[in-house]
Length: 176
Image (cartoon, rainbow, N blue to C red; front, side, top):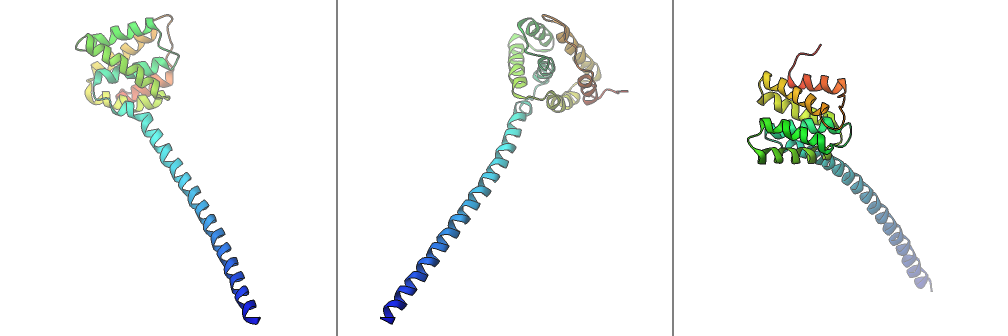
C-alpha cells in the first residue's frame, strides 16, 4: 500500500510539473507572439514610409520631376480640375520632347502627387534633383511655370509663402 501511495504521489507531482511547464510554454509562446507582432508593425510602418516615397524616388527625368512638383503643390489646394490640367499640359509641353512625353509626365505627376500626402516631402525629394539638372535660368522658369499653373484654371490659387520659400531654398536660390 505505501508503494501504491508513493507511485500515486510521483504521478501527481509529475502531473503538476507537466501542467506548470505547459502553462509556462504557453506564456512564453504568447510573449513571442506579441514580440513578433510588434516587430511586424515596425517593419510594416517602415515599408509604408518607403512606399510613400517610392513614386518620387523612381523619377529620373527632369520633365516628369517638374510636372510632379507643380502638380503636388497645386493639388495641395484641392483636386486638379480639367482647366488647370490643360494649363499644366500646356506648360509641360513647352519643355517636353513631344506630345507623348507630355502625356506621360502629366499622368505620372497626377498619380505620384496623389500617392504622397505631404507636399513638403515632394519638395524635399524633387527640388534637389531638379537643382542638379537645371541651370539657374531654367530653375527660375520652373517657378514661373508653377505660378502660371496656379493662376490658370477655374480660379487662381495662392500658393502658401512657406511652400514657395522652401521650394526656392531647395532649388538653390538665395532667400532673405
